[in-house]
Image 1 (cartoon, rainbow, N blue to C red):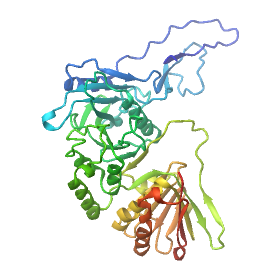
Image 2 (cartoon, rainbow, N blue to C red):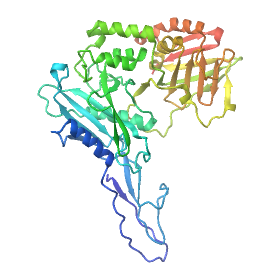
Image 3 (cartoon, rainbow, N blue to C red):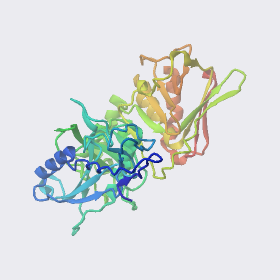
Image 4 (cartoon, rainbow, N blue to C red):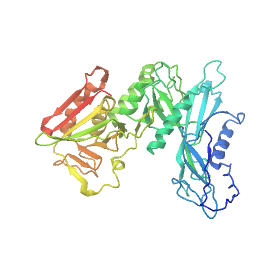
Length: 464
């Protein structure tokens, strides 16, 4: 498929055909792209033309408009007839390019030879509005970051594997579809070996690229670099229950990652198994700090329990128009605030207190309930489950959290798609004890229901 699509001209009946001069093509210059290329050349001066993975059909697609006077035919989805060119979404892969560099590493410092992948496309490469809003002074470029990845080189390997490009495209697709950015400390449940093989590196943490600047200024705004770090499921769980950046920093001293956080797909054990002192530091951090993870994307819904035991179901189905067959990663963020879940179009008058509540979670989300209660609520914090099935969200809050619309008299309150659940200290302690069985989800017989009749509250865990 060609990136440039020409529209047929139309003339009024009886109007003599007037052949206009074709409009000039858009400028081939991409100042944002040039800035990133310039940075890469500084780091890899001997690799000015690296191997690059590129989308055959760009995520943006150039649409050309023929202008004729006095009548102009403009396709309905184009908003302005004054433009000679317009852009719209087209290809399946958001990243325009992914450059792949050979890095010799620093073996004496524990940095092995590896491949260094750098994405180009989450930031604004062109500055003409084709994919990102036109930048303004002091703003981030596009989403404000690019992804990087470091993969240990196999002995005798002369060309970089291309599977990391697919991982980067999937993460970029999540960013474009959700509007959420990724930052060091975030973590992603991937639930499969990143290379499609049979190894133990099945999850992702996000760190700071150690070789690139914290941030650079481009003609279209600032860009930072967030490095993908392949980790084991045990390391992901440690990040969830404690602190993403804390675990990433500990991995820098681990034999399997090293100071540059190089992903080694041959690694068979977690850092905690290889070095018991790391496990001890993580456990101390959990007990001291609780969890810094304040929200997850999840499959969840709720049902109102009324006095006559009738129920009002609140469960929106996935949009049938969503025909994306790709596996969407579940992203855990340390920055998700319950205030961010509120629909700006929902009025205060829609606030409604519920007499009782039945919450349902799939197994993956349910396995995080011990984290939500013991690591967050019992430390005086909140935790949000953002539904991937709809625009709804469930936020569990401690009594000390301010700015909520729940109270001791009204512990379950819904405003539009946002449900808040207030847990007393007594109820939180009961839940933490009962939810211990969820720490071994493979041993649970599903569906599993927890009930607290005195609080008119039920929670059910079902199969994914």
